Length: 108
Length: 166
Image (cartoon, rainbow over all chains, first blue to last red; front, side, top):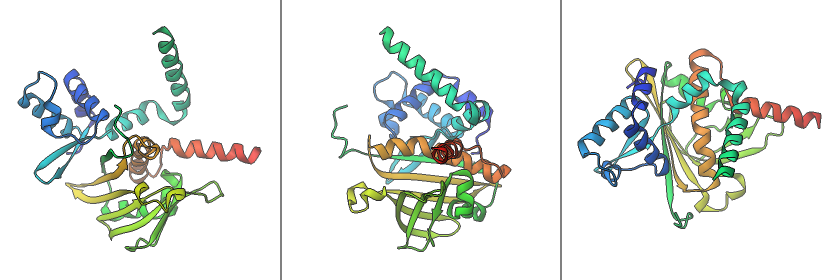
């Protein structure tokens, strides 16, 4: 499925789906069963969310034997990043991000 | 959290869709004249199974940053290479593997990149997980528009410019 930007933003506009991406960021290549563990979403709901994420190309899957493994595919997010943040602003944005992190760490 | 990271393996799967042809995508990945434009590296090999391949800096030093062996080569649809830092060439456990699959998907090309057999938490795993998204975005942009918005190339250009001044 060719990801258009509407699909990417729609897929990201949901806390449960962002949480699934977070889980894949922490541990890439999980099965549906693993992704269902530890929260109260039904298996059907997780499946539906994963399908939406896959259609938006935010999740890539591979088959390992009988298992389907899910991977975080950050390419569409990177494209959005490149489009609006761009190459020249990257260093400044990174500097601001580092500053924010450093200040937040001090506050804690 | 306290798993021995030298035993836990990790892998990454990236998918991107490019308005191009499989042959052009293959050429863009395997020809230094192209890779230097969006990857800021010369990717060099004869791409025959068993041959060596190298990723070399374009700052004039020609320093090799990654090297390996061509494991499978089926132009323009499938390329598998091993991947290792030059200083770890003698160490089997430091080798990871990259598989490129190039296929038509409707009227665009679907490029699937799998980087596996990586040690979880290793410097290489961290480096490539930041690197591939930029390289693949650069490749897409290069093939679709002829220009590559490569942050890496700008960084390495300014670094080499500073090196020349110093």
